Image (cartoon, rainbow, N blue to C red; front, side, top):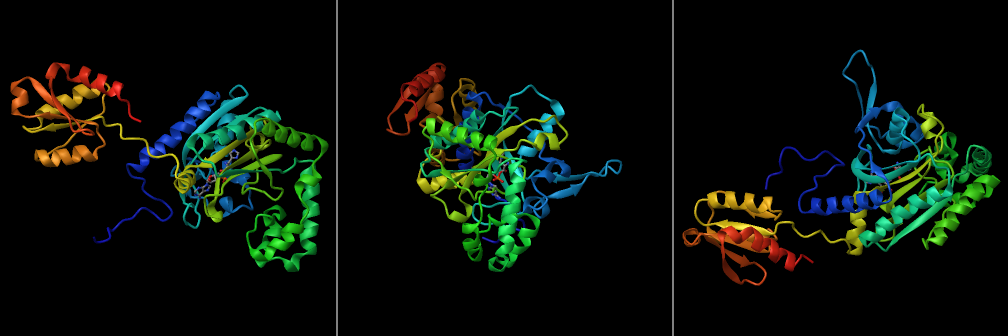
Length: 426
Ligand code: HAM
């Protein structure tokens, strides 16, 4: 087959049926988990003023290199707009704009855009689900959001997800730590890779994120934030840990977990799938961002939340062999052997009765229609030919067992509803 002229842009992909049915099912499990915990959905714009995202970190690649930016066309508002690279900042912008009552507990789902170097599990357009809990400083809020993500992975059937936990301190202890880290790294600068030497200038914390072999010995010996926490921050961290202990949620303290975004303070965490290749094994991450709302012009409001990557979660489900695609919701396939007009009427009637019904088009042979019926995943075929019309009936064929019977036309919908209820899909 000749290659078509146009392909999906680099770093993006088309999701096609039936994969999209599984995709939607994951989002529905998440939506249920969040809604049942009192989180309401926010749908915010896919593009925002660039200023909304500057707090992600002026030294982070997300801001410096990965924004999809464009000018507003209105000459009167020379605004730089960007496709959102994440949703936490958008949610805080929305909070500052609408000032809802706190605690404000919200969830979201949707595509994010980052101009990354694409590879398996790393895309330029990817989908996140997440929650944000604004207006609660309580460590129990940190525990709640972590537990929500954890239980969500569990309900998908994932068992090889581990939780990495850290505290990044607050505005009192972080500067002290950063200074200690900087002077340590400066003292070992000759042992660092060139790239990390450059990073050190901009943001010493990010050096800890380096995966380069050459940097590992220095990173292993570097001072860690958790040794610099103030009493208050340490108490918060201890409360988060004991909350997780009380829920039986296992975690690993990861003192060098810095996360890719700069707005975090205190609790930070990441979920890694050990079933995935280590380069792209983060299936989710989050933490506290107590200053972000204020930085975006709102009242001082603490916040905590997470975002999980659906693309990678489905890769992890494949790797673990869990979360099979839901069965086709088509219950019945109408095989019209006459001219298609009966199929039009019967599909409509059955759909209105709440039955999944499909048909074929273009006057295809009975054999061809039966083949499509088998492929559709339908459990029954309704066959209509001249004999059936003459008897004011239809032939109802069980596509699993092969038995068939004549059913009065007027009794078809009730008969099918009963049959489908008697043997629900597994
Ligand atoms: P993040 O760590 O940048 O955090 O992204 C969260 C998750 O999104 C990652 O763990 C990964 O599963 C997925 N992800 C990120 N980039 C890509 C990509 N290029 N391709 C595929 N999947 C990707 C945030 O976005 C924060 N807003 C999380 C948060 C919420 N913090 C507090 N509240």
